[in-house]
Every structure is written in structure tokens, then in C-alpha cells.
Image (cartoon, rainbow over all chains, first blue to last red):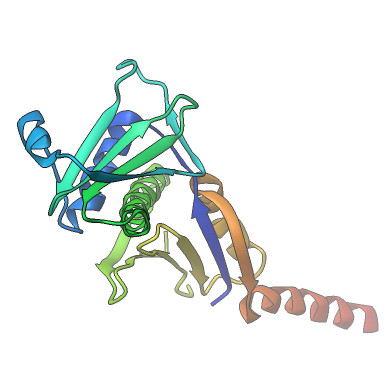
Length: 152
Length: 68
């Protein structure tokens, strides 16, 4: 081994790239994208709400304008990803019978998976731009994505 | 040619670890750094034996030349 560098990703992307990362990331935790009818049935009174500002993120202003929003649900918990007024990514967690702490913990888990998918997308894009070929790829026991590139 | 490898691990929180394997000297850091720029903010860095190996070889070569 010659060098090891650890990097904390900064999410800088337009809404379609973030949407793709959200769909891929939350799917592994059993959440799924909902349509408006399902969303309304998932909503009810007395929902606890917790908002999570995603540090180190910037949603690039796209041609779609405002109203960029994506909701996913699982077991009565709704997670809504939006672009806030500052242009950062925001996650709003809502769930009945859940404490704010539980919702925050779940939201941070979701954001971790979204960040993992975004980082994977960035890595693969960089490798393609440099004509570097992946020789091995897999998921570890700790749910990390491992990529190996040889003699580029 | 020695086998040169790059190993990239992305954990479930999105943190990325870039390891270079079999690349001697400062070039190993250059290869890893190029990914850091594309991804975000560097949190930590560890240089291991192979990084210093090439530099030691250069110093040994200079010492030999001076003796002549």
C-alpha cells in the first residue's frame, strides 16, 4: 500500500442527478417513490416532523425552476427531499408514532445512502473520463461499495 | 511491469477511501489526489512504506555518485 486518503463528499449536482441518487440510495432501505394518491393516504394527523439540513450540499439551479421535490415512503414514514432557499439539499422526515430523534436517525441513515450513491456516480464518471477500467466491483459485509482499478 | 492498483471504497455514509497499491513515490499521492478534487473534502491521509521507497532509492544513488 502506498497511500490512503479519506474524503468526505460534497454533493454538488443538478436535481436529476440528485433524484437518481435518492431513488437508488433509499431503495436499498426499502423506501419507494410515491405518487400523489399514495402520498395523500400516507399523510395523517399527528405526524411528528423533523427537518435535516444537509451540510456540504448544493443543488445546482436547473431549468426546472422551483418546486424540486421528491418523496419516498416506508411503513408510514415519509421522507421528502427538497432544494431549500439557499440552494442546499434538505430532508424532511414525517412519521406517526415516531419521536423526533428516531426520525432524525432514520433521516441520517437515508442521507448516508444517498451520499453513497452520489459518490459512486462521481467516481464512475471520473473513471470513464480518464478511460480507467474497473476490474472488480462489489458490496462488502459492511455495505460499502468497493471498486478496484488495475494498471490503467 | 509491477501491478499498480487503485482501490476505492465508499461506505454506507458516503465517505470515500482511496488507496493506491504498488505505486512508488509521490505519484501515488498524485493519483489519489485527483479523485479527492472530484469528490469533496480531504479528511485524512496516510503515507506508507512505498511512498518513501522511491525517495530513498534516489538518495542512495546520489550518495554513490558523491563517493566517486
